[in-house]
Length: 265
Ligand SMILES: NC(=O)c1ccc[n+]([C@@H]2O[C@H](COP(=O)([O-])OP(=O)(O)OC[C@H]3O[C@@H](n4cnc5c(N)ncnc54)[C@H](OP(=O)(O)O)[C@@H]3O)[C@@H](O)[C@H]2O)c1
Image 1 (cartoon, rainbow, N blue to C red):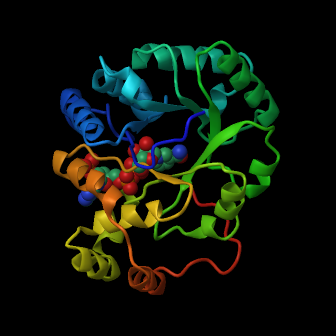
Image 2 (spheres, rainbow, N blue to C red):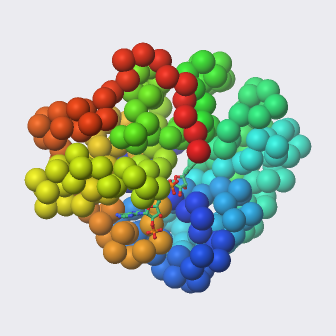
């Protein structure tokens, strides 16, 4: 598995009719143009609708994209995984995924899921496999070969910094930080983010993304269907937070002092 791009694009809520699919695909293409070449999607999003939007976005430019999709736990069985992957590939209009993730752990033993992932890898349908929403106890039990763990990580959810992120860093396993701008909720209204943003002539969303990117081994995947948001997010890659910025953010969003259960959306 080659190194993952540090900054990518999410697709949750795309392909659900909130906006014309062509506009959503155009936003993703703009992101590709601006260097956000990892696209994160899932069979769950819009019941396959998001994967269809991604197909439009990557048509004719598959080679420049690091394409990530996810299988639902109910499909993550020996027989279910090949079927789910084939359906995702068909919706995406491609013949391989760069990374295929277990969306969260269900009832199927992880070993069975990993065996099925390995078979897809041998067949060339996926380049690598990984997981999502797994905390350290489960992550430790995985057979070797896990290329990433995608978890909720942003200023409001710093729990992974206590033990999960350090372990992943030690094992050179990227942490894909989802919801890095807190789904544009109250996080972006927080005065501390506004204060740091003003120092950099930046926006609160850019600071929130820069915070996730400041962690070695982290990949950030903000979702944006609005072109102005896409431009802002791409520019966040070149923002460098100072020790003073980190102190301001730590005071407002204290790092964890003890183990917290992994939060998920
Ligand atoms: N593995 C999992 O269980 C899991 C769970 C959640 C998410 N994810 C993945 O992670 C991706 C990102 O997480 P998310 O979609 O939950 O949340 P997010 O990226 O934190 O927030 C997306 C929201 O923020 C807005 N936004 C984006 N950039 C902005 C900016 N610069 N300024 C102001 N608002 C901005 C977007 O608006 P517009 O769309 O209007 O631009 C959208 O409403 C998802 O799309 C999905 O691919 C994975």
